[in-house]
Length: 113
Image 1 (cartoon, rainbow, N blue to C red):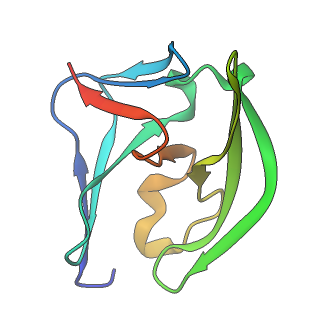
Image 2: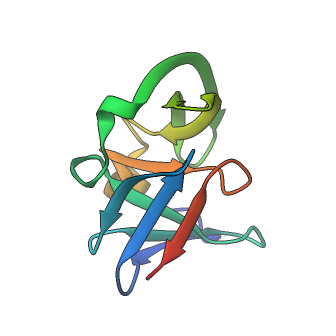
């Protein structure tokens, strides 16, 4: 793994809210830190209400993590475009984040409760 990426269990219970709804709550989240960037909480897909997520055509590439695919959130107030990303087939060094979802905190609330 790249020296600047660290993955560890996120302590406690984490919740993600968007458009006035709770999308998920988890005690099995992971915390990924990459260099000087703020830590990102990754939620297991099994702890997220996937019915509120719609696959997007957006993709991105990270040399350390691999290819990311994106989802928009279907909220009562309207779609929240590309608010979620996931590494379906991450690089072997970060295999722990496979089947996990991360959320842009400027589009949704991710909080420890």
